[in-house]
Length: 478
Ligand code: NAP
Image 1 (cartoon, helix red, strand yellow):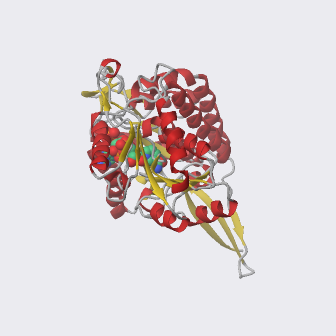
Image 2 (tube, protein in one colour):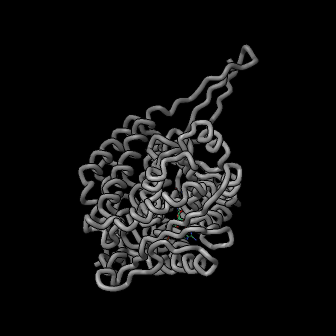
Image 3 (spheres, helix red, strand yellow):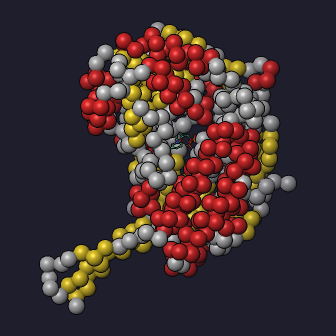
């Protein structure tokens, strides 16, 4: 019997069809989940519309109390959720635990923000006039989330939407519906009323995206995923002038200047590059190393890679898990083969892992490429895999120009001990998030999002709540 992933109007619904969820480390089917259709999406939108009036008029304190309760429940279930995430998505248990904590942080942060949705009074030039500004929830929100962070990408949208007083219909990635179902169970147990949150699992996303974009009751689309799909959704929503938030792909530069400590920089690069097996939007795609630093940097990074164990994330000795599917393995292999054919040097890795404990899973060996050049695919295409691509450079202006030479603009990293250089490079980079001698510039309290084709809008922080609010002006003649 399929697990229901259709939580609509306060009840788990059945569907005529189902789809399989597999463990990417073994290929084993771990569950079957109900496969919805456009009628389920429409039903969910109706339920969210019907619930909007009472939810948006509930007090911010009532909504905050529910989010706080959900925060507590998520932490109580941290291990259980992390275990499920590792089986469904593949990341090692330690990383899965970290993700659950990050996901819970959004519930708490936006519980706190809910009660700080302040308005403004503005002085008028007329003695008989008063201006008042208030911020109201935008309405029913359609949310679409990816598989790589299958819990935190949900709470990063649900928590601010609920805090603001919006109701939501959410479609999770086909690869990770089980994590989404558990997030919904927590919110339901915390007391989110009927119709306020609706979950719809589908194996075919396109028709559902069409319903979300064209249905008149949806006032906002919030999407995290690839730039190609984000552009399509933004285009489809445009004729209806729906608000959109887009958290899209990245191609992060990681710049190591010659005054940095090469060992510290290589440690940072190894931790952030191989996080989630490279399947992160903020993963460094191009590691620029100033020529004087190249040898010690490569040597340290190669040593660190040699000490990483790849395998099933349930085994705590493994720090590198599988890729999401075979297509992801092929994409990575294609980028590596292309780079090698154009003259890159293979320092370590460079092959898929198929035999023995890897059979049935989607594994690729952690790989280090040196002397990557601009004509290689990996220099332009998001990799989303465990490949560290190193590009030597000579001076600061050159590296800034190269770093900015991409249509993406999500994350960037700088390693230097020179304060002036750090500040100037930070200011010159066209990226929404910049880590300076820091590989984790993310927090529920900090605005996350990209420039250029990496997105529109921000998640987390005060900005994250503003995405779900309209501004209303009252001009009073007194
Ligand atoms: P994706 O293929 O764009 O899918 C994302 C979500 O969109 C999934 O739920 C997917 O459903 C759905 N989808 C696909 N085509 C659709 C359509 N035509 N209409 C409506 N929905 C559609 O991306 P992904 O492979 O899951 O995620 C990886 C990408 O996400 C990378 O580019 C990564 O950089 C980006 N990402 C960005 C951030 C950020 O904050 N900027 C965070 C995480 C990931 P199915 O699963 O059923 O295909």
